[in-house]
Each structure stands twice: as C-alpha cells, then as structure tokens.
Length: 420
Image (cartoon, rainbow, N blue to C red):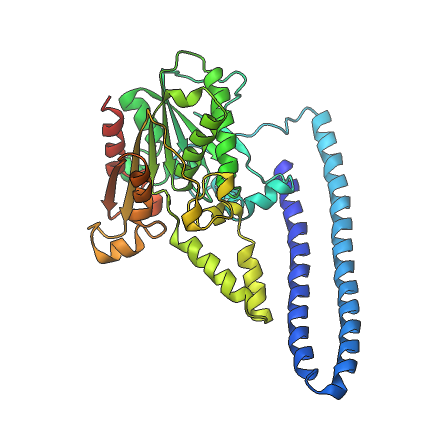
C-alpha cells in the first residue's frame, strides 16, 4: 500500500510539474513575441494589454488543472486509507517488506523489475521523494541474509568478529552486488559479501538507501545506523570493513567523516575502506549535465528552457557527483573549494578503478575510463597528495557496473583484507 500510495503521489506531482513546464513555455514564447512587436511604438501598448489577458487566462486554466489534480489526489488518498483500514482489520500485515532474492538469476522477474525501477526512481528524484514523504523513498536499511535488520536487536546468523558493510551505487539497490554472479562465479548466489564470509570469516551486511539524496545526508544517516548496529551487535566485534561501489564509496567516506565529527564509536573498529569505481573527483556525465543545463537556461526559447528545467530537476545525489561532494559544506562549492576530508588515520584505503579497454594505459581507456568514471577520479590522486598514500589499482576491460562483482577485483579485495 505504501508503494502504491507513493506511485500515485508521484503521478500527481508529475502533473503539477508538467503544468509548470507548460507555463514556462508560454512565458518564453510570449517574451519573444512581445519583444519583437514592441519595437513598433504604435503596437507596444496593445501588445502588452493582449499579453496580460493571455497571462491571466493561462494562469486560470493551469490553476484549474492543478486544483482538479489535487482534489483527485485527496479523494484517492481517502480510498486507500479505507482499503488499508479494512486490510488491517482482517489481519493483513502491511508494514513488512521482504527483500528481493539475493541471486543474479532473479533478473527479469516481476519483483526484480519492481526493485530495479525503485532504485532508478530514487536515483533520479530521490531528494524530491524524501521531501514529499513519498512512499517510494527507500530511506535506509541494512540487509543481512534474506531480511532487513532490526537495529534494536539485530539477528545475524552466523555472527563473527568481523563485519563487512557493502554500500551500492547510484540508481540501484543492494541487489546490484549479485549482478552477473552466475556468469562470473558459476553460482547465482555469490557476491563479494558471501565470498568474504566464506574466505575470511566476515559477516556481510548490505546497505539499501535512497541514492537521490545528498551524499552527505546519506553519509550522516549511515554513520548513525552503523553506530546502532555496532552498539547492539550480538557478539564481540573486532573489525569493520567498508566496501563502496561508485557513489557508495563516497557515502562510506562521508559516514566516516560524520562519525568522527560526532564522536561515534564504530570508526575505531574500521580497518579498511575499499572504494570501487568511486568518483572522488567527479564524474564526467554529471559535469556535462551541469554545463548543458547552464547553456540551455541562458537561451530564452521553449525548446531550450524546458529541457534545461528537466535537466536541472535531477536529484541532489546526482549533482553531488559533479565534484565528489562529501559533506554539507560542499553542496555549492567549486572544484577548488571542496572541504578537505581527512581519512581515518588508523585505516588503510584502497581505491580501485577500471577502464573499458583491456590496457588501462590505452588513450581511449584513459579518456573514458569505465564509461562513467575515469581512472584518475576513482584513484583519488588529489586525496593521496593531501594525506598519505592510498593503495590503487586499475583493472582493464571492466565496465563500471562490473567492478562490484568481478572475480579479479574480488581477488584484490581478498588479498588486501587477508594482509593483516
């Protein structure tokens, strides 16, 4: 019911947004026409009068559409409220949420399609979903095995002294850690988490979160969730390993920063932070999007301003990838003014990157990286210069989405974690 209510709310929001774009288009056309006709002095005053009438009429029509849209929303909300009440009275549990099967062969199933769509919607407009308290907002949950953890009394079976926290990237959910498992490992149920459990005795926990929110907001929330988990951990805990793919690496670093600022306990147990294809210094596609929005906005025609508004509507999480923002102070900073975020002094860092070409030094591979993140950004060269050396390695012939479950990448991860 919560998801259906959220989808319905998103449709109503889309109708409102469409009326805004229509109004924007009308105003852009009007400015052009009035500007040209007003060059003839005898026409200037009549043109302005006609335009005022046009503006009044347009606002009236679009206002009526918005009013009807919201009236329909209120009526359908009341209907859902009644349905929920009836279902609850009959003993139905509407609050529980079961994760999608942790297997790569779930691809194409109805639940997989729904989960993938939910991840994409959160990545694209997750900040809007959160602000509107929309039921499609993924929030943040920690998954172990086939269920999400109750952090007041987490049930981890088996529980070991070593905890591995895996954080997915933009526009996905925790299921992405099982992508292509059967092709890579001959077993659809294998992921980096299960391999770390098998080979090195880690207890894997997967983070599920709304990737459309600011990286700093998710980082702060993850810091708090991990503190709750560590405080209620059902056994001795000696080590925490953070593994983040793409945006997940930024969220992991942000969580460490906020946990240190707030004096939380869990960072003291972090031994390693591993970032897989994370845009520490920004992603080219978001930089292109930012530039396109700026150029289109500067041209006053419906054919440019409307696309500009659509591009500008991308989520806060996506915008953070322009320069790799980690904390609140970075939201509006330029590349030279980003906050210098110290790394945990007692932990080792591994920044792994990839290129489309098998030879990482190939000019094409250097230019486009893994299609979404270039190797220099994923390797964090500027961070290395500011602090201390970070272990880096670039894998040739590996795409951005593949680095989170590729056998060669796992071997590098295993060796790093087994080094003591």
